[in-house]
Length: 139
Image 1 (tube, helix red, strand yellow):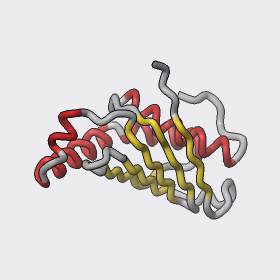
Image 2: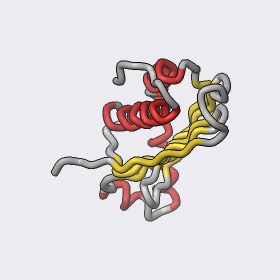
Image 3: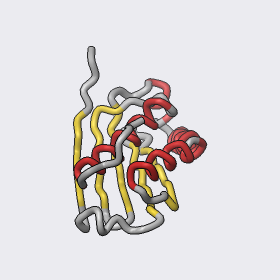
Image 4: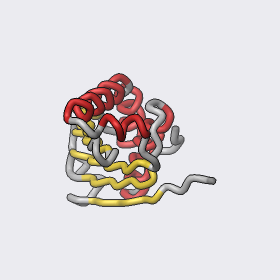
């Protein structure tokens, strides 16, 4: 996906965010308009807001059972490809990912991905780091 290792904290944040966005776009076929990343000592949290909601998902999200189904499907799809994402993140960070979790807000379509790293990024990053980007899509 991305060819060179990050040179700075900002580069690392950007490359991690791109890796997660590319995984969602290429593997899960999901597209987002806004992304936010928080990098802590050995935890990374990425929040993704959808570009456009899928009508069938909006309809499912109207009932408690439908929301559960959406969340389960999203989690299963994400976890089926987490090895791909984990390999790319390890290449970028130089640290393996011990635990992946993902949560979908069925009502809003916002996805939150949390990564627990095998070891601290303390040497590479200050204790808390936060970046946001807006993704532009050609018409």
